[in-house]
Image (cartoon, rainbow over all chains, first blue to last red; front, side, top):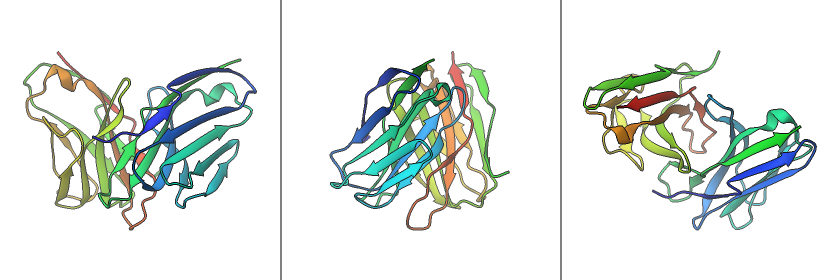
Length: 112
Length: 114
């Protein structure tokens, strides 16, 4: 099945640093979502994007829907220890199949 | 509280012994889906349902069955589990309104098949 290319796979950063991660696809998407998964829990929605070029913030998180509709970016500013977890992007295909396709995840570890 | 409830949270079973993982949501969502999560592979869709009595295969449906007799419930059935079905499973639901909102996920079921 189709998957999104998400990078980086993992990252270790110092508390207070900014973080960037992205998702790319060879296909066009109508919707991009970003989720966070804490250990032992299900993913929780952070940000949803519905229009090409859209830039949306949720606290210290900012995400953008790429102009080409084939990519999306998530930035976390001034990271804190509770930001640790796995971040997933998900895209809703424009092909009309009503299926979300998930990225492989970015594992974030924050060093205090 | 709006939520997706999966049971059990943990399950160890033997090869070939039929099992069912239950999923229930209290948000009146039309769309429900099952995913499995494996290291390095992210979340892969097993089956989904757009409404009662409407189900369809996802990307990795082999070895699984589902049913959607009621709007709130979407059980995942493994008729003859095998070790390669050892995984972390998530049920998720959302409104199906033409423009999708994000999923609400359950807390997961960690299945081990020996």
